Image (cartoon, rainbow over the protein chains, first blue to last red):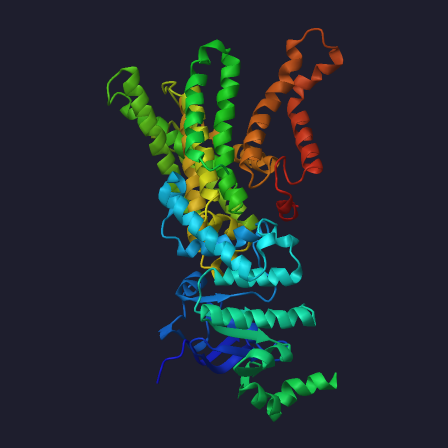
Length: 258
Length: 324
């Protein structure tokens, strides 16, 4: 059997007496676009924080490309090829759009502090390489005109897009998107979904998408996992999920009541 | 940021050399004030790397300065004649001692940088303040460093050239570091540590590096000071001195090197300038109390400045929200 890109094996996360995630197993293959859904407070963001090393699981295994990531600092995990966006936007607020993306290019620098200080030819070459990569990424996401604008001046949707650009600048193999469509209007959402699809194909990424807007996930994900009260209650294609009685009870049922 | 910072640095060094030849033409009082400006520029620009660009609130810069001042002074006093007696020989010892003082301070910066990994904001400020007092306490009890009597007898090697050459170098290092992809790590740490880690930035490395580089230049400033005043005393490096430097950084605008340097100049001149009333006998008598109460006036001016420009003189608008 081929080892999946990301493998979570019976992961449990306990905060004091609160069991946030229990016995959660999930996997993502190379280049796969997977969704993770669940009602508010189901533990979706906690799963992200476990994968990216913000939290250390109480029990269970998390392996990326066959190697455990447990106990590694978040920046090391990013260096291995997992990048993420944040549910509550976390851009570098005092920096411009360009500088935000540049900060994410930091980890791939071939040269260190001496080059920055001595400013030789190598430094200039590398900086211009980085610049052209950033310009290309901003172009794909339609942010070229905003290049030198402070990131706080961007619209909400653009800020979310910038977060994706910034994550892509770390050259990930797996991209974790935490509610990328939150706060967007329906048109923006559709556009964003197309964009996610496009980047996934263009960069050959695996994507794990956390959402609670069902339509978004159902539309593009090849496979969907459903989380409720920290437990995985279902997994399958959009159609299977839609008709799963447990999911309907936990999630869709409530929504249709409202 | 200019495309050719190296050329600018070279020009600045030449200007320092030219300035040096004017030294004989200024009165000792102005000489003292101008050297003070140079030293304060080094201190403020280097603290700005820690407090302004990296967002770590350090209140212990005078501690690093003390480490540099005492290390270099002890070195020139102990090994002053190692290269002989000529001007060139003393200058060489002096230069090496300055660098060694800077390195000792950088080592202290490393030691202080490590708690900064677990502490932030007010808590870090308290730890650095404590560090400053510990350094002072150690020196007060160190017999070879003169303890409470202070340490004197150094040769006055510091002049316009060395002071402003190091000031230019400090500004160069801070600016080239910060304006590069490498240095964007400092800014990312300041803005959002969690996001910085998630973008693959080793936040530990950048915080410690900011302390090490900042402390190095504070140490050099201490060495320059020791070899200018020719007498140093532990009380000269207490937390009040640290506050002075922090005030320069905040007043100049956190994260603006130009603003911070301007503030260093202004805040060195201002208390001196308020003495000026005494020099003009024709001024009305009711102005006389200005000289005696100039420190009160100085504080008042600071308060007014902070009320009218909370982001500092050159502070970027976008940092206002954080500092407010």
